Figure (cartoon, rainbow over the protein chains, first blue to last red):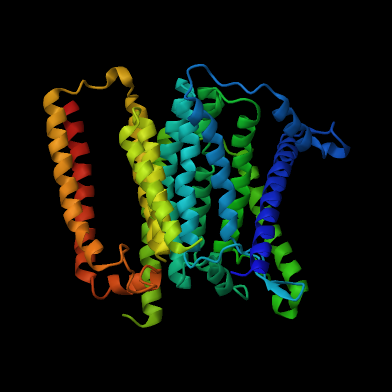
Length: 342
Length: 171
């Protein structure tokens, strides 16, 4: 690895970090405006024109609050919890191909930090350790509501991870590769996977909502039963990190859904462009897809009421997993038939 | 930094976190140290260019099995007062059992120090990549692979059966 590559990768990592945080901050503003619109209210409008500075005001408020650690809490784990949540939310952005190559200073720069040949498995690895942040934080608070929240979060995430994995396997079967870059490139020219695998996309979308702990699956922080769920005892920026990590992972998982099912940075008529124009347009197309997913996720939150816990388990184990397995078997048969193995 | 240097540092970190699993008094902390140990082992796999194994180790052990461990421990809510007193007899048996296992491991690892240069040499550089592994699993090792999957199904059916039987007793 030469020095120029090291510099360009470091710059890309820093840029992605800042963009993720910026997008997460403005998602909170967007969510409040959207909620206001759906509920026929005005929403935040005090800080700056149209309340556009609201996220900055919120962030400042979070930092200025008293940072309180309960006396009987496990101090170290209490501090580590929100950190793990934020870490796992941010790290997935390193394997996503954000656009076609950019030509800068005579160098072809790939807009993907790490092109693993197992990118999709890396995403699942990070998703599967993402639950630790909530579990450790909820347990370390030494509060029964926090513990309930943590236990609900972990059982929910383990149950839905299975269906999520099985529905994503169909994409790997169709593409014949585990690399996210290959998956995006195979969808070139409107061959988007969602047209071939609508059922898999539907399951993946529902399970993503569950993994994000978003409504209608937000039982871990269900305020009518559990006060605040796993972050009941948290205050100041530690609480801020938990809330922030939810929005960051919403951004990243919207990107993953766009990559797996909606062609990533591909857009119709992209062959007419080349070079940096193509790169900028592909990034814009990808951003638009991500924005639409974020919008739909928020729209669902303000429309559909929360599940009951037994309904959640029923849906996960008795509906989504069997349907995903049948879908996987049919895809396997079709792929084998097309390859001439049968 | 050379590759040997990295592997030495990683190895000592793995052993240190492994020791902390045993030495830490609190069961939840033990589990968290075990998760950290699995991460170091995954890093070892990446050092051997076996990315697929590394990530599967992370998904299966750190991501699924240890989450269940933590889940059960949190439900049990173990603490220091509930820790069973260890008798002299149990200490002696534990030392004998652990010592025997240690002896077996030393015997098994003795050959590497004799023949190699102190390190395990990886014969094929891309053995752990997913294409190579998949082709091997579905050609040379097909029968063991299928048999182990039958073993998993047997375990699953057994678990379901045990859960069902308990319910009938309650009725």
